[in-house]
Every structure is written in structure tokens, then in C-alpha cells.
Length: 187
Image 1: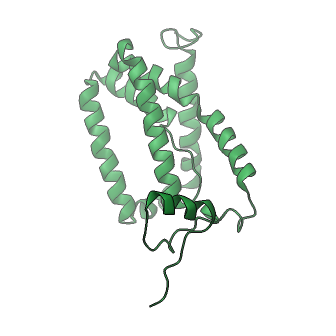
Image 2 (image 1 turned 180 degrees about the horizontal axis):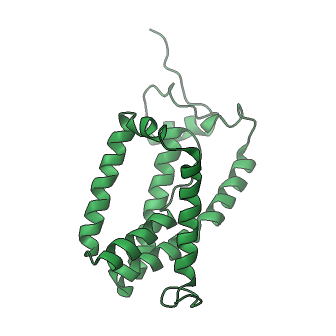
Image 3 (image 1 turned 120 degrees about the vertical axis):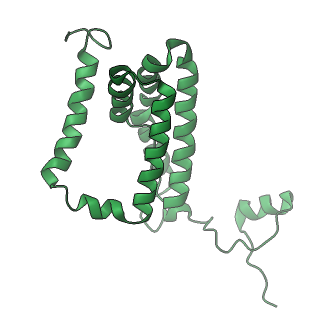
């Protein structure tokens, strides 16, 4: 009977002292995320993680502020915590499942559309609108798993794809410049 591969270094020490036994040969603990193979290292990844966090940190208060316009200002602290928790869980799961250190958080364009067009513009209760978002998320997941998303995007011209990104940016700028939502430059 061949011996089971053991965990080396501090991992082996921790496994021994915690009583963890088993075959861990499928885990790449000596080079997680294949950093060495990609020419990176711990210090580079820590700096990159800090930069990613700093570029995404604004999402927590801004998302909470936008969503509280629909859900009530008394929920703003809960919305900050929920945004942070969802971003943390999504980033960890996304990194582990894709083997790339991605930072994932709510998109600022869709939440603004959700609040200002769907809830406040159309007058839907936010609970019903969130239910629609849940079902659309399931539909998007199914189309992605079946490969339909890639098939559909082949028929969207590149100019339209670029214009969508610019349009969302202009929509956010418009919201930020309005009197009742932002800086008060546009009525």
C-alpha cells in the first residue's frame, strides 16, 4: 500500500495538531493560485489585494446610500453590512472557484437603475422589485450555464456593447448631478 502524501511545512504541523487526516494531494498548498508559476509572489499579491480593496471600498457606502433611497434611510447601516458581507463572500467564492483573485461587489449602474427607474420611477415596492432581480439572476445563470449568453452576445454589435458601458456611466453621472439625489446641478 502506497503511503498517503503528507502536508508539508506549517500545513503539516497544523494538520497533525488538529487531528486532520486524509489525502490532501489535490490541494496545491505550496503554491496557492499558482503564484510562482505566474511569476508572482505573496508580497505582490498582498499589494494587489490592498489596491483592489481601495478601489472597491467606495461601493459599500455608495450602494447603501442608493439602495436606502428605495428602502428607507433607517436601513442604511444594514445595507452597508449586507454589501460588505456579500462582497466578501462573492470575492472568496469567485477566487476559489476561478483560481484567480477577483474582487466582486455590486455594480453601481444596476443598483441605480433598480432604485431610480424601477422602484421610484415605476412605483413598484422594493420587495417585488428584488424578487424580479432574483428571478432574472436565475435566468442569467441558466443562460450562462447553457452557453446561450455567448451565443446571444455574438449578435450584439461591438459598438452597442461599448455604448452600453458609456450609457451606464452617463446615467450615474446624471443621478449624481441631480438636485434631490446628488450635487444639485441638474433639476
